[in-house]
Length: 211
Image 1 (cartoon, rainbow, N blue to C red):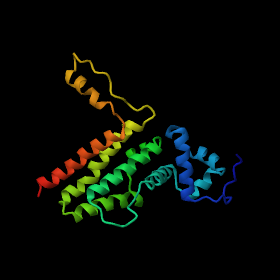
Image 2: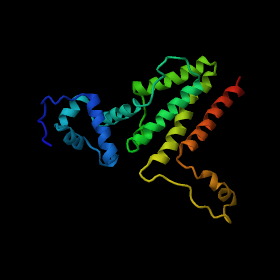
Image 3: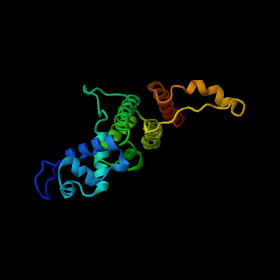
Image 4: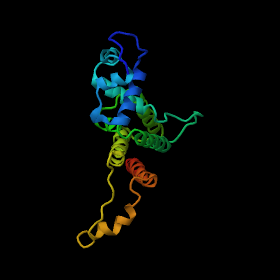
């Protein structure tokens, strides 16, 4: 692909650059990602990218924002939802995004997510929780509790070599061996929903204990 010279108009903008970067990482992985390789994909000089996004760190943030924008932000009918329903919808959208972009997903775990699209999702959740009368201490902890679960769970299940339940030696570890059949749905939607239920129930339990 022929490259344009520096300063030549190439129809670039931040969304187009971010989308191309996401596609490149989806295909080749983060370890091979670089601005020069992205410039080749776009057919531009690397400096043309820096004109729109100031540096590689800002480019990684733009990629994070692009995939987070795929998470469904709200219902179409505008009807009010409970905080639990909002948390479930957000969690499922986040899971779907992670499975679509498993090689981009580590960016969301390792970099602070402070873009408008990320903060807007948190605002929707915490506003609903406050509207339901939950104590502010519970509400303030809720995003960390929810996304600590989501990031840890999904990072383990969307990697290039996702783990699996090992075969436990029944003589050495009888309790783990007895429970192993209940872990065979590793990575499934049923497992995700079961664990999400436990997280939300715990948050609701903290709410009740402080009222």
